[in-house]
Length: 104
Image (cartoon, rainbow, N blue to C red; front, side, top):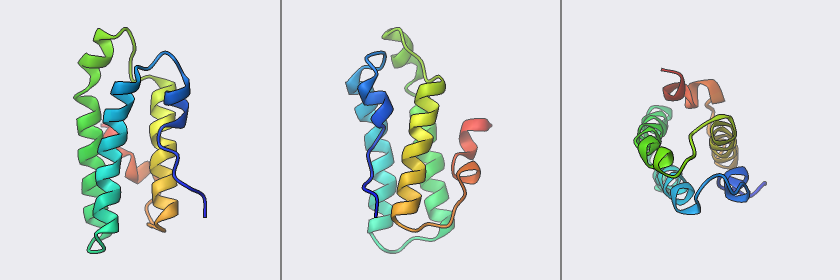
């Protein structure tokens, strides 16, 4: 099974400060902790993903302060990491549903 590489494209792109990417990674790892806890449902995983995305949006001002933004590369890297998590743990959520908060 493929290993989860958190936000790989964001880490290799000098546009994104690593300490901000680390914060996003930590939010996504909270979702993984829920899953690894063993008592989850699709609804609780979705709630955890929604919460993580809300926290990521809360970082927008910090990204702006460092002359970067949560644009296409960031969005794609976050989505790819979420897909990897769902596949790794065999969670049956499609990416559009899992990433729904991004599009509200």
